Amino acid sequence: MSQSITVGISDLNVTSAPNLLVTYALGSCVGICLYDPLTRVGGLAHIMLPSSKAAAPDHNPYKFADTATMDLVRKMELQGANKMRIKAKIAGGAQMFAAITNSSIANIGARNTVAVKEVLAQLSIPILAEDTGKNYGRTLYFNTLDGSMRIKSAIKGEWVW
Amino acid sequence: MQQNHFNGLNAIHLDVLREIGNIGSGNAATSLSSMLDKPVNIAVPQIKVLDYNQVTEALGGPETMVVGLLLSLQNDLSGMIMFLLQRDFAHMTLNTLLGTSLDDFSQVDDMSYSAMKEVANIMAASYINAVAALTNLNIGLSVPDICIDMVGAILSVPAIHYANISDKIIFIEDEFSSDNERMVSHILMIPERESLEKMMANLGIDI
Image: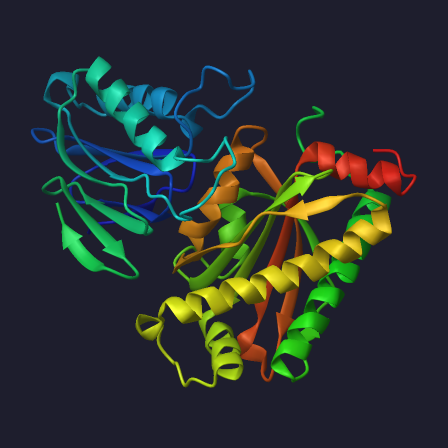
């Protein structure tokens, strides 16, 4: 029986085939799907901010691109994944409102996307698919059977990466 | 509890915030009512200090489609005002104002977008004027910005803004409706911590 596991905002989860990982309504946040095709272990993180560097000491590490991705890889390894085999697919990072000038959130979607790519590059994890930017929200379904990432937009419809 | 977290609010603070919400949304509803020429009802405001995940649940689940309108608070206060309008409510508002018969957002054109923004502008200004008069603060507003999408995606914008500061978000939530119960929509006023303190201080209350 395949289970569907929901990943909330600033959260992450790891599972293996045949389960599904779901995160709802990514706006400027970014969803990071990591997959080891051999063991079929998959992990999904839903991050809000680029970097933990300026964060308070008691912060939730799953909120940030850098710490969440590192932790996600570690948790996948505990479930038998091998970092050498892990590939990534990422989605989100939209700009929901066109004209925001407030400095802390201007371009935050794009900055999140860049930060995610940077940390994946540091970890030498290749990005197989990217569905980022634009101006609409995305719900993400990550299937650990085949590593596919299905994106559903309330406005644009559905497609699979 | 750390200063940066919003949890240090006591019953008096919550009462004051509720009153701010009440006066603000009362004024906003009155201006909407006169634009539409029909009664607009408002519920007693609620003050919520929630995790982000709870926020979207409280607003009907992350995938609920809404019309989001966002304005930034300026001058003495910083923070945001956000309108989350149910689609039916937005259709009703546009149809009443423009004499159209929209029932689907794919039909929404530039004219409707500007009309929606203007409604948000007038309502937010009424809200803020009332709060400014009450607290004796000079409060300005940015021009409104609009987004029609899933409520979770829209709320990621204020959530990310506050994620820098806290894992929780405080907002004054006012429900308003017209004609029938299904058309409940929300005004959220999301002040920053310092702005919260400023409002309280000007009302003679310690925080």
